Length: 203
Image 1 (tube, rainbow, N blue to C red):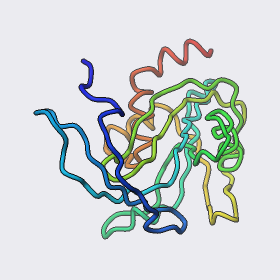
Image 2: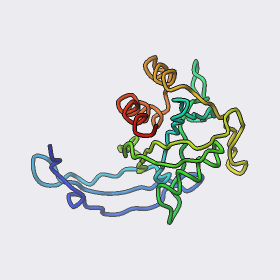
Image 3: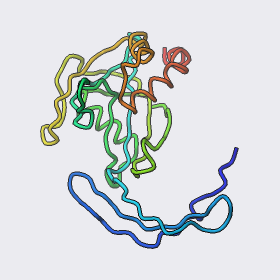
Image 4: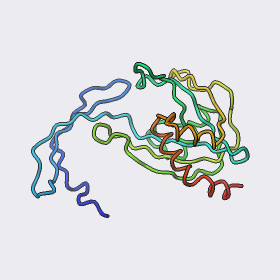
């Protein structure tokens, strides 16, 4: 199936920075093509801008395990739930960086982890109705990792505990609904489908 419209079906009439802090908010006025024909009325939308991100699911083929991170996330603060999450490695893409560079930098900072191969998993928009971020996910073959250590960049206020989780256990957590971080959920669903073939490829 092909989508009906492309980027040429949007007119950006104006934009401004509405807020700039740790993240930014951009206000955009635009029109877009309508399925029934013609153009929409002028719409004004605020877009959350945090940059694109790269995530990598570290797979240790020798132990059939994943390297996962436990850390605090303020966006998950709500009654009756813990704001600590079990996640893959992830980071924001800085100007001039390619995805592999981001993956390897963040792996070192967050988990004292090094990879050999990096296999693409998916790219997606977590919340395209309000946020410009695109996430690109990979699976990395682990050479070493700081399992049991506390990692993270002090300047970013990171406090990260590094875990080794057997693949079977991680997928069981997925099935029980215990993985609530979006990047990790997508990557584990991919691993559920591709894990056996990937293991045979890397053994």
